[in-house]
Amino acid sequence: MAYHSNFNNTLAIWTAFGGRGELILPIPTLTWQKKYYYDFGYSKYGTETQIKVYDNGNAQIAVYHAKTPYMSYFNQSTRKWTVVSVPWWSYGAPEVLWAGGGVFIAKITGMANIIASFDGVTWYNAGYCQGAQNSMTTGAYDSTRGSGVVSWWYYKSPVYYSFDSLTERTAWTLVGADGTSVPIFSYMTTHKGLFVGVVGGDRSIAVANTASPWTWFTTIDEVPDTYYMFIRSVHEKLFVMKYRYVAGKFYVYLCVLNDSATGFTETNLSHVGSLADNRIPDPENIIWMEDWGKYVLFNESMLYVSDDGLMWEGVEQPGFTTTNSDVFGGAIYVPGDGFYVKCSDYVYYAPY
Image (cartoon, rainbow, N blue to C red; front, side):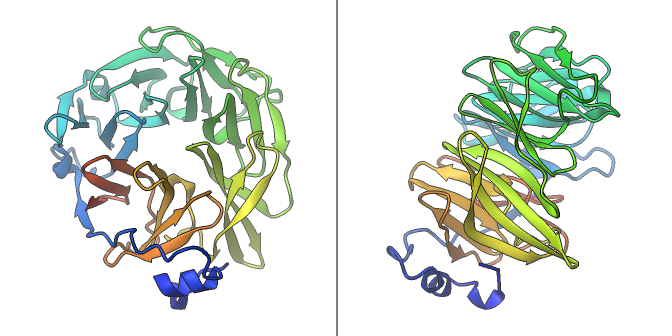
């Protein structure tokens, strides 16, 4: 179903979906406000203003994209964002490659080190990817197996992997340097014992068993004019954004992949228009709300909920809007505090 502003209200959306179930009035209309780097305890560094939020399932951090030796984490005791000293970031701006399964994995901009944390407070030198430096693009970690992978951008297609402790500085193993046996990835996640990734160029999807991250299989082949972005596993469901470019227009669909990532089902959320539009259904902005027993997705002026990840219903969120070409880039929920949704140089916050 394509987005149209005339349908951007609860009753119209419910009616358009056939009036199934109960109207989701218990899902709240929230009060939104903007928070900036200083609201998370940071002092300004140069002209940098970008702030991002991440949740690994046990801890939440707010990352200021600047070369400053601090990290802000949500202190569960004081219920406040608290800055702690992390000397690693004095070497370069932190970029989080993975958050999930109780683990944060990050890179230092300009270096080949992998830095890891479990609580957002204590950070370990978890190893290094020889020669990768700035080119590390994405990563994933299976906490059950203790298996991690990092992809990087090069003229060939290598992936680094490790089964070593994230608290020890060891070399991650490079595979696929022949340029053909292992793809490079734009986006990665873990899902039920698999690493799943959108292959660089965004045209296909490939998987590897987390016990053997050196062997990859293409599960969804390239199709003309079809692309994928933002793959994420959330509460037993594997989401991906699919889009087609036809006659100068983007046709965007939120999809649910099966557990083997060999096929997908389109959900009822879609958008026709530009990719630089906050009405696109972006899996980065999906979370699981344990208290509600529902999936939640945020986009322009809306909060959508779903029982199964396939059929979504929405509640308007007045004041929850961005400027042209600004899109939400990640959502988290801090239990007992509220929702946080990343924008370009600020984070939207709604207490709940």
